[in-house]
Image (cartoon, rainbow, N blue to C red; front, side, top):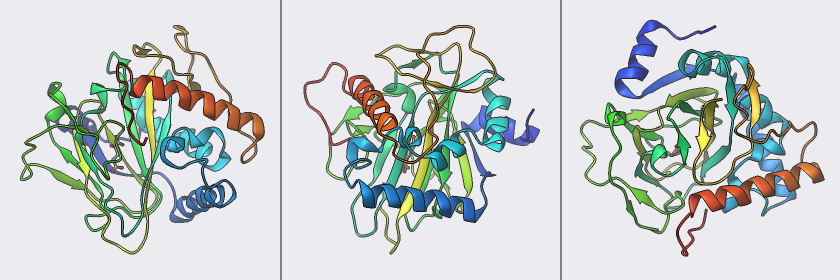
Length: 274
Ligand SMILES: O=C(O)CCC(=O)C(=O)O
């Protein structure tokens, strides 16, 4: 099953990303935003900084996006019919802050091998040049690049991973309306600038949908089955939340996030904010 055109599939293969793809209505996107903001109000530290990962494990609204059949149909046409979800991240940029994301390749540090996986970036608010939308360097997915680890102020990445000298004239802005998504390849170089608007920019990022053949080489990740069957069984399976902020689900999220910290900071004593 797919709803991608042959041009879109070719774009993914040649350029390393596809955008925009309609997946949610604007009211569904707003409902998800409201659920995030309710969690922030009730448990202010729960999804802050390194808590931003795996919020779908405590939020039925975000979980329903992860398992949305429109998204899975598209993902299936790229990585095949057996699909696991190994993590999600909230990339929130609040107004009047200097938050940004340096140019980087996800595959450089996430530990998922082989690269039969894909990231879905779902816009829960509009994402545009003014509020710091993602920017992709087309065709950069063809090889792995060197990264500096800068741990710099405002950088939303764990180690401040940075590919230097990205040719800005080749980079494309990925502008999305609330409810649209982009898909990107594990090796495509991407980043984003600061939010100069008066509202938040919220990206709910399913990072990543992986094929069942994909291993976590830097630690362990539990997964949900999104579609199909898992004959490899490389990863522990976890369930889906029925209610918001259930105590047991909060524990599972914490455990999964502790595992992610091991992966992100493997081999380092120094830790960043995320
Ligand atoms: O949300 C952003 O600006 C960057 C997100 C990102 O780096 C990613 O989805 O891999």
